[in-house]
Length: 189
Image (cartoon, rainbow, N blue to C red; front, side, top):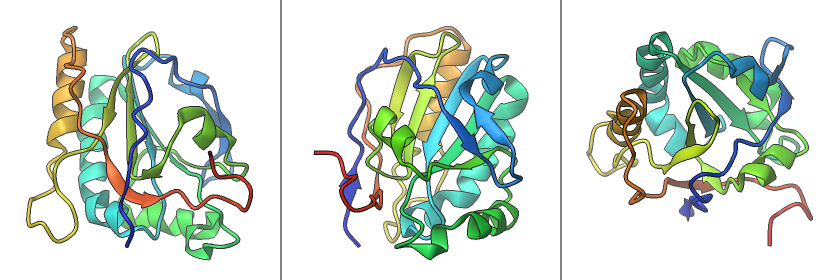
């Protein structure tokens, strides 16, 4: 499995808007999270071993922080024709099996992944109340096979600091995982 790091979108970047279908057939947009103090945007998919490795931890992280005013949304931008495991039907199963209590969206055109400069699954972005990027990087140091437990340590620390009104250090570790499966001719340069 090839390892791809985050592109590390510049801190301070405004959250790009999106209007994408979720697993229940509803269209979800950035505006749907307007009441949340913070917003996590995670690029994930169903088949990636890195996402499978952290999925229980991601579900727990969301369950721990959504009651504290943190919005969570996950986006699958993979080419579902080439990777049918990532189809909407399989996304619906994944929501149930993983215990996700947040919207899981399909970016079929891959335009939202381009707007966020997403590179891998998983790829995490934390936006403040004004929807400016304050953290982008790994959930924690756990990887498949490295025997480090999935705790969400890095993302938890960033959310705790942001919720307390503090400034998150710009020294952030990129997320790593499988590359986004771009449609032919759609991969960024």
